[in-house]
Length: 246
Image 1 (cartoon, rainbow, N blue to C red):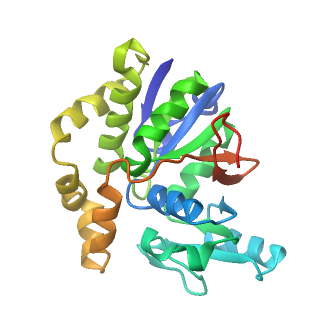
Image 2: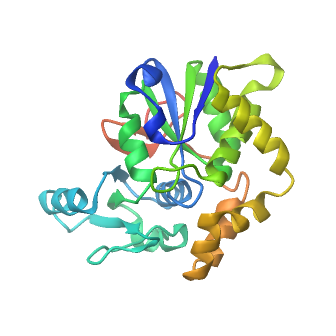
């Protein structure tokens, strides 16, 4: 298993993704939000690149069982039902509903990763479940950090390093690009300070300023969830043990 890390979606090519499992990482906050929504009973999460695409798709699908979720500048988009806080996606709101999801960074990164053999969502919250899934799949792994506005984000890159370490244990994987080497080194620097990292990074500080301090605690929890969202035919659902969706 070759393990590669890309600091932003702009770095990854179709060739990089081919025949690999893409792992989309958006620590603050799309990864946690998607995992939470699906564990709380959402039928599916459909990632799209822009709010306009989300509104058009929702109009076609009908609004009876469809919710619009996402954000711009960290805040809920006007006319949407939900933002990008995992704490908003409670079971009484999302159970049985399809969620069309347009976050600033995570959703476009997922759309970009469609060329991979499989694409899954990972974060601190579902780390061990993601490692198990990837080891079972046995393919090369392309870890795609969502970044922030197309640029490097510290929290995503550190989590990518944690994932590299988890996959590389006992000789199970091969660190195969400079991104994976750098991410691993950076994770070693922060491994005992993950909650502090999430609070001190640029986006964490911004989210705290606009009232989402509780999200930072939530997104920094390791293994608080035990499931893996997988993208199949453009829709995210929870993976079964055989890699297919539930």
